[in-house]
Amino acid sequence: MATYVIGDLQGCFDELLELLAAIEYDEQHDVLWFAGDIVNRGPKSLECLTFVKSIEESGRGKTVLGNHDFHLLAAYSGLEKYVSKSDTLTEILQSEDAPELLDWLRRQPLVVKHDYLPVAMVHAGIPPQWTIAEALTHSREVEQHLQSDAWQTFIREHLFGSEPREWQETLTGWERIRYIVNAFARMRYCDDKGKLEFKQKMSPNQADSLKKHYQPWFAHGNRKNKDHEIFFGHWSTLGAVDAYNIHSTDTGCLWGGELTAYCLETHTRHTIKCKMQCKPKKKP
Ligand SMILES: [Mn+2]
Image (cartoon, rainbow, N blue to C red; front, side, top):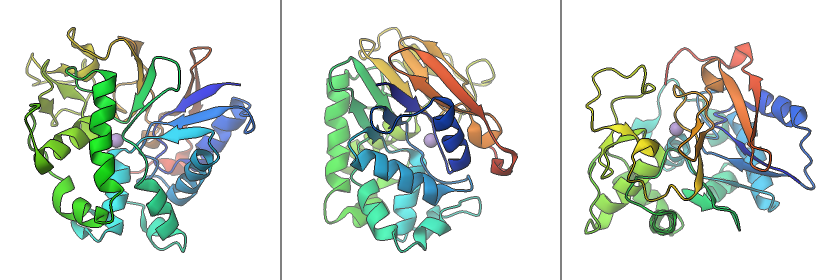
């Protein structure tokens, strides 16, 4: 039995199948964790979403919600301003399975923890000021809204926006929810108190004009979640990083890079090169 953490699929289904063949995936015994952003931009979002749902429902896998997954929930809820030309969500939205797929998607968490190992997964990152226990609690605050009957109103009216960027335990209402979502699903850089910086999308060695107090979320010395090995996706320009007790898994398959599966038990990275047809024009 092996557990593999697989990076952002974003519709790269052919590469996923090739990767599963390469790791000799055993569906009876192996476990698959997906780091979110299952859909969008790539060519086979419907196939990816259907596959991840089937794995999660079989009890042999988990996923977390990424910004593109929220984007799909928004498009389904009628938020047309979040539907752009580079999206490849139409196939899902027009599928007869859409209600069932979306109903499953909105019930997925933002942060998950391994049943008995000190291992966790999130799409983008966990701010330095939160322990894993606190991160799980905050994830549930958002999940309650997504799982309520009024979930579409929540998404249409309260979910999106980049403010507030600073966390305070005293934050309440939608501001509190928005910070939590933005940290878990969009963050790359923040300061040591968890103030979010959204403009910079490049890796630290390529990032110019970044103020010094902003560091990759995982690089702050005061990080309270260092006691857990954290897997995340989202940051395709970062490359494969295994340091600070974190592992990046988005190695930019969508942008002509690779799709990664990281084996938890053996600490081994397995990768498959992007296929040509999966390269969109727009950059992250
Ligand atoms: Mn993302």
